[in-house]
Length: 86
Image 1 (cartoon, rainbow, N blue to C red):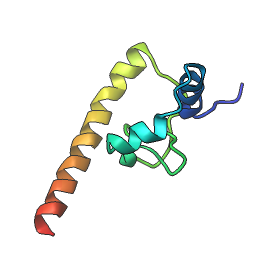
Image 2: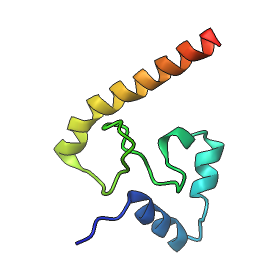
Image 3: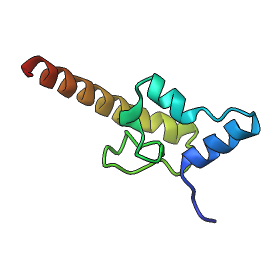
C-alpha cells in the first residue's frame, strides 16, 4: 500500500465536510513554517524537511513528542535570537 502525505487525508476530511480551508487556516495561524509549499505537514520531530506520511498513534506518538518539542523550542529560540540581533 502506497503511503500518502497526511495532508491528503486531512484535506479529504475537510472536503467531505465542505471545509476547504486548510491553507487559509495555516496562513491565518502563521503555521507556514510547519508545512511545505504544497501544504504537506512537515515532520518536526525529524527536522529534516521530510513530510508526515501517516498518522502515528500510541507509544510511537508518545516517543516522538520529546524530539518534536526539542525541535520546536530550538526553532523558537533560534528565531528569537535572530530577531534580537537584527
